[in-house]
Image (cartoon, rainbow, N blue to C red):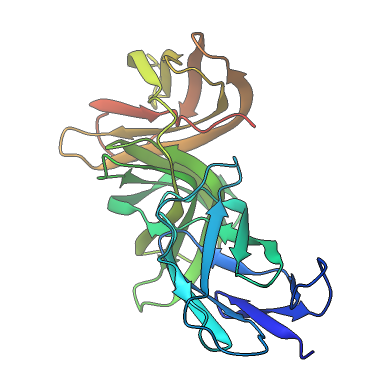
Length: 315
């Protein structure tokens, strides 16, 4: 008997001889992959002694949680040695290890697993700015930068957002690049803030561009509420800036202790920015204080402060 084959998402799994008594063969599956939101093709080769148009093969698949995806595909007639299906993996996945099962009359029940990667999506980015901060060390110069990020969808949240900020000089040449991995989660229809500081030696940036991508995920998180946020200025000259407030986790899962801060003048120009990491996580139903000294800001008078504490699950 000739071995047959199964293909998932373009990757081959072999159908080797053997299996239950009286059966034509069974599937030996290699690791296969797919992506949420995409169409995956499943094909199987089945060997029979004679063709029979009444033979109908069926395919079922289950998510990592064991839920069946229905309807997954129409039954396929096995009047020839090949059958196939096209499966649309939902955009929200879920990601992880899926299982599948193929049943054909006169053959064994074939089964295996394949990996589904989360759908990656661009995150909306706007108002990217940077400002020189008076924290100079010899030839080094420190800059604060910030941008707004947004998830316009009401149907899903975006997790594990990776951010890339590219600084260029007046000739368009790259001066430096800042990458933030797994920076934040944006819940459905949420707008947030990404910010940070970078030290650049010997060159002066003229522009900054910010891009972000993340994983589409099922809605689970609730935005963290920022309360009593206020800007405190010192009476010294030059003026030093501090930010105080409270972050309250109204959701049902703990969130990581990381957040972004930015200070603007009355015209919306950035005066100071930083990101705060490695704070204790915020358990569900509890709060954490915000108390950060930003130091001196850029030229201008501080008019407002913004803070974003992402609802990133504390895993």
